[in-house]
Length: 428
Image (cartoon, rainbow, N blue to C red; front, side, top):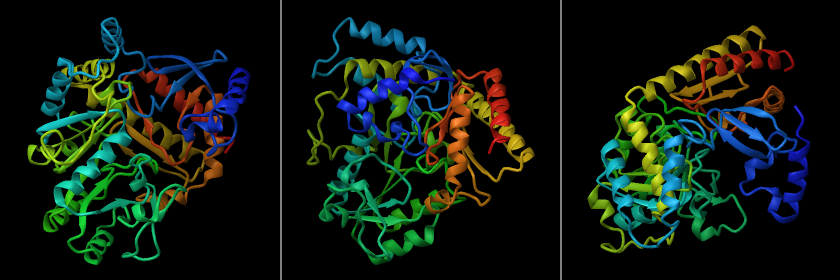
């Protein structure tokens, strides 16, 4: 496939946009080459500016769970746009989608909508600190919660050392209140608590990680975190921006039967438009302004177009009793096919999957945390990525991202993909 027009557009974009992109991974720095520019999308397919059709395994990084240009969402946005695109005043739609989300997700009484997953996670941390009257938080290496200062932290040399900024522009004052722990290592988390007694407001975690590839929680890990938080009067925050309304109607809380104190949403809840949300029981949410002391606001929060798209998406998922079973079956079918092909070609690999999230790691050892994810053969991944791109298949341009499966994918699409991987595997 040729990508001449995309290359021209990228060169033009670099003149006026930093790095030519508005989100760094799109620049293809992790895999090399020139990013593609998309012109349109429908169902399971992307159509780029060069006229190529690509089978999409990213689906806008998760929200297109029912495929691109899903008609009920498109219709809802069009009809709402005819009546005005933004008011900065409450609408009935906000209450409707809030009520539906609360009915679908366990352990939440109230929800507040924001404009992105980053904003949802940032606001949840402020709320947790205000509610507990403590400053420190624990996050896990390899878990990404957006680009808020508190989350751009890397580990120090010891369990009790403060974090240090992982990006210029993040102050040491901010970094000192973020403590790092190792994903799937409960003893490490316990040690962090021991070194910071009565100081930790919250743990925030991707309960199924998606930013070091797909990494599931080990047996009992989430339950152990719940117990540890209860013992230390600390809040447990699930960042379900990726997993919410994707792995189950009620997300990971439903899937693993583990209660979180605060849950963050994005992606699917906006039906493809920029939406985030955070939710909790009333006792916690009532700490938010205007009825509580913790301030949070946003002019475009609850935007009618975004609310219309999100409501249409959640209604479709709520009505379809077999959707999550279908997604799981399709992704399992893909996993089995990939395993067979890579084994036949003597490729060293590990596959992680939870429901409709899946990732291929080119390493023989299990991938259970960020360190083991980094052990993968990135050069092989680059060849794998570009090989699939030439076959008309688009996966994440990074070895540290999960694939997201949509219900729009047919078994013919999956077979085409498996056969393409067979051809690419011979070149690895």
